View 1 (cartoon, rainbow, N blue to C red):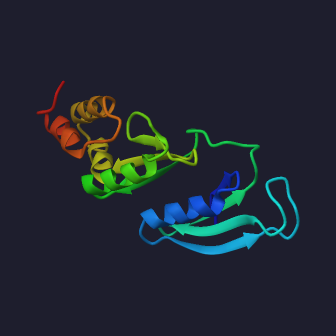
View 2 (cartoon, rainbow, N blue to C red; view 1 turned 120 degrees about the horizontal axis):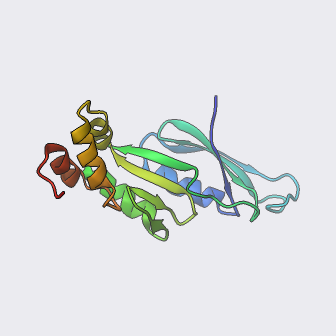
Length: 159
């Protein structure tokens, strides 16, 4: 089994609780307290949180201020529709920042890609002109807009 270990500076339990509140099939599995002082905390503080996020195991570690997240690693979420894109975008970007092409950084510094499943389907189309139109439309967006992507795919969107 492979599971991501996300490094936090004292906010591992808070972040894990927030993440599991947003996605179905998610839960906190176990919270581990430190048995002695360590570089990121004191004996008795939360050291690690094991959690399931959308059915996949993850860990959140209170490792201290030594490392920060970068967008070089992100969590990509496949969204069923625009309503799910909007819900997750609003929740995850609150207190964070947004980037182009459906990327955002949450309040903890973790990068996410909020991707409508329909975009992935359109990008797999064998017609390179359709894919090019979708790519061009996506490159103008911050939060992805399914209707605008569909319009570009169909050749009726802005050029």
